[in-house]
Length: 84
Image (cartoon, rainbow, N blue to C red):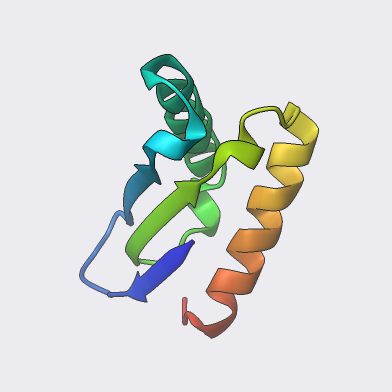
């Protein structure tokens, strides 16, 4: 996760990077949808700014609880330097 703090970016802007190494188009779109759902569920925790969420092939087989845990962990570490 890459974050660029920007007080003018309200609501926070989120982009997704899922490369071909993840799998075919169906698998990449599935990963993108999961990332989008995770970002929506944590929208209140996102400080104003620009976010780039990426995933590799290891994200695809994760269950929902593990994906949620990893996303929360990334968000906490990424927002460590972001003022709210």
